[in-house]
Length: 221
Image (cartoon, rainbow, N blue to C red; front, side, top):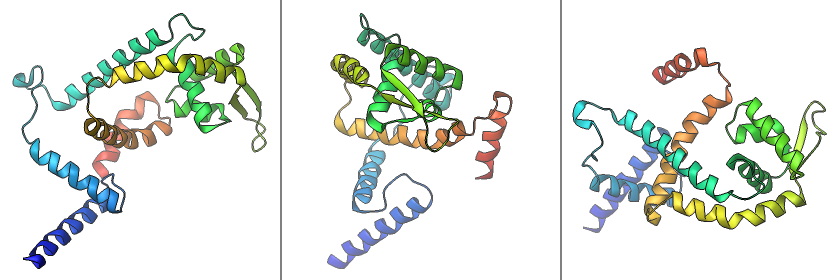
């Protein structure tokens, strides 16, 4: 009996390692194995598909996911707009840029723009606005004289500090009534999507060739 259990566990480990090799997003250690087991159990429990609007008329899950992501972005923006109301911040992007500079330190303008998944022109406008407010300072890069490094100032840190309580409350509202396990699963899925899309974004493909390029890459995998 004991050996039967060991054999079953070994089969699970082999299946886990096989899925890791096929690109599943788990760390190749005990913690990753436990997470995989937990997700597998939950997946088994959740075999019944959820209902969604117009499903009976053939609306695809891809369409629903895209719509819900767009809606979630709009909800989050409305809460962010409320958080910065009656402050010196113009948009939610202003404090997101500052949060990134506080967390990751000084970086080039393009590094900061790409970290926030913005077009260059939009990102430059935000950075210039932050510099004008005195929240960000720019200096010449020692590695590349053509680039400018941007860093958060003491005034910028103070502006963040004054707003962080409202920002945290807005963030809590966005995740609604999800419990801890649901939050962890959502993070895992969103990270998986981000890992797929971010390398494509960094290629800076023209809109005229973006879809064809990505479709071809997916077909070749």
